[in-house]
Length: 102
Image 1 (cartoon, rainbow, N blue to C red):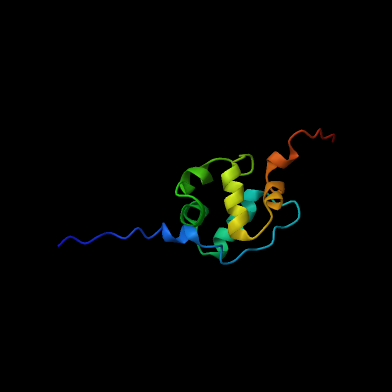
Image 2: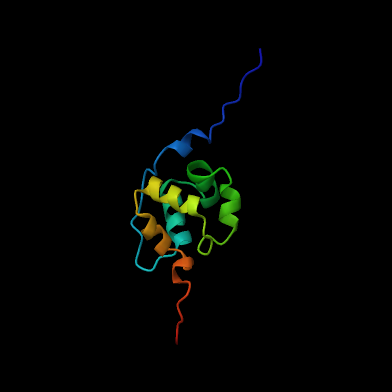
C-alpha cells in the first residue's frame, strides 16, 4: 500500500498571520515583510510560500517595494488585518508621480 504524501505548505495559506508588527514610519514593504517573516521564524521566501502565495520564492526575488500586484496587496491586507492602503503606502509605487527636489 503506497503512502500518500501530505502537502504540508498548502494548508497554512488559509490562515491569518499569527504575529503582525506595526509598520514603522517610512518603512518599505520588503522590510516590514521581512520582520513579519522573522516573527514567524521563517526566511522571507519560505514565509511568502507558506502564508501568501505558492510562488513565494519568485515573489521574494523581485523587488517587493516596486511591484504592483493587486492580488498580493489584497492578500497581505487580509492576512495582516491592515488596510490595503497602508500596505500600498509601504511600497515605492505609492511615491510614483511625485517630483522630489534635493
